[in-house]
Amino acid sequence: MKKQILWTCMLVSVLSACTRHQVRHTTDVNYQNLADVSDWKIEGKIAFSDGRDGGSGKFNWQAEDDAVQVELRAPLGQGSWRLNEEANGEARLYSGKDDFVTAEDAEILVSRQIGWHVPWHALKAWLRVTPHQQAQATEKQEDNILVISEQGWRIEYKKWSNASGRLLPTRITARKEPYSIKLSIRKWGF
Image (cartoon, rainbow, N blue to C red; front, side, top):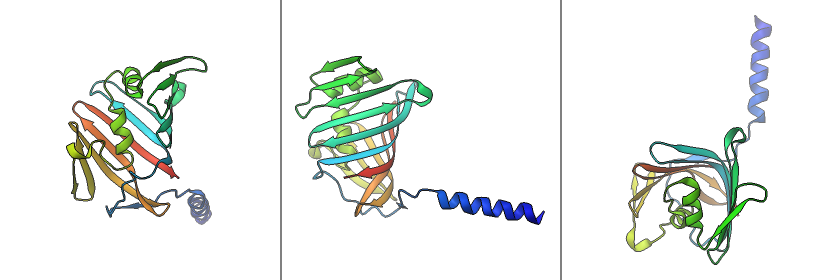
């Protein structure tokens, strides 16, 4: 019995030592919006829902000036796609190695892929904790949650981490009934 307890304690110690601590969560919402940051990247999980159907996957998002590249991988090999958006707004969506479609606007491609209108341009701003159209948005704190309301969407920043000398969001939910977009950000980079 003592050996079993000893082995269990050692196993727990070894496993906890191997755990990676990428982010430290905080409830302090003295955030810094990232509107002035043009080169950044994030990794995490994303989920889309129209109230009936939905999808989720892991994503990598990289922005350099006004150009964006996003890779989305669905679980269990259910598919993936990559979106390349140029600084002029033109976009190419790859759904296989050589299969792609293009459009003059990334919002059109993403909305077509998801099956409902996704506010792509606004989402790019919301990820940086800033409204897309400042004059038409409201911003407030509810308990420890920062809320931006814009274009009928309610964007909630529920969790934060201290990284790279900034307070960065790690849990974002955007809702406009019946639609929702949820992001869980595991890693930020600059």
